[in-house]
Amino acid sequence: MKRLFLLLFGLPCQALAAGPLPLQPWIDAAQPGSRLLLPAGIYQGPATINKPITLEGNGQVIVDGGGQGTVITIKSDQVTLRGLNLRNSGDSHDKIDGGIMAEGRQLLIEDNTLENVLFGISLHRTNDSIVRHNRIRSRPVPSADRGDAIRIWYSSYNRIMHNDITQSRDITVSNSPFNRFIGNTIRGSRRAMNFLFSHRSLIEGNRFEGNSTGIVALNSEGLTIRRNRIMHAMDASGAGVALKETSSALVENNEIIHCAHGIMADSPMNPSNRIVFKGNRIAHNVTGIYFYGAKGGHIAIDNTFQGNLWTVSIIGDGDPLNDFWWGNYWDDYEGFDRNRDGFGDTPHEIHAYADRIWQDTPAAKFFRNSPVLELLDFLEHLAPFSTPSLILRDPAPRMEKSN
Image 1 (cartoon, rainbow, N blue to C red):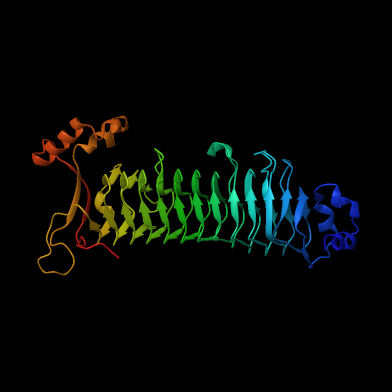
Image 2: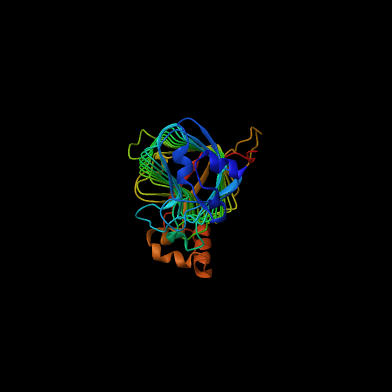
């Protein structure tokens, strides 16, 4: 079979014994719109696809970049890459060396394995395309020295679905609105997802575990972040979800477990464009929610706060009642439900007592769990010697956790 493919493409039969074949002649010989099913074996990259074709390997084809450049570059619309093993890209961050560099429309990149590549899959000015069921691994070096598993730049209306990513740097989405990220698994990386000026993105049903930080969004309006499971983001400055200069966001029905900060957010740039947190389980974090900057602009409804060292911390000026809290479950609520309507008879309020010290003086955070600060906090609750600062008031605390 391999001999027949060599003859069809005008390649000398002696190449069988001469080591890996260069991939580029196979691509050059294929007709636009054709399906090129490569015989099992190892092929030499880098290679460039500049016509609409389908390139398949059935999981039995290795394309080795030889440590030079990007293994496969796509410069055409309507290209499919399927079932290939891509490895050994170059190591230039400036040139974005990686497994796949794609530019075009209606691309399909699926069921590929990328290993020992600096960057994984880069989409530059790529629209209406699908990247799914790929396995991506960067290099065994410190996370800052790796490349992005998926890099999306000035690209829209793409679907990034069910990819398995470990040991990368970030997924970086820059100036790329209207993309969907569904069902991906990201472990052991720096930032699982990093959005910059990428509006109206959907992040749904993903699993982020053991990364320094989960989802970071900067100047990205109208995000929907729902039904994700974000765990063990315990870097000192890490967070499950971090929103900065971002408005009109919906963070809904996520599980955010065991992070340095469950959710971090400043106030929306425009107070009419609220940030909504609804139905999330925020549990076993150092700080459940951390709001910084001017207070206000947040809506928190039907969330579950459980086992956090500090439930909510708010740093900044303004009226805390500009934030709206309703129907959340608080594991430290001390009220009753005498009419059995499922909500507490009295509001749940959180005040800043001794914790005001480290909130106003960040260097004092080092002493947060010290016996002296714990004693001071106890005495402040018992007999306040200064007026505590109100952080939040939930007028209808829920008595039972959401399912």
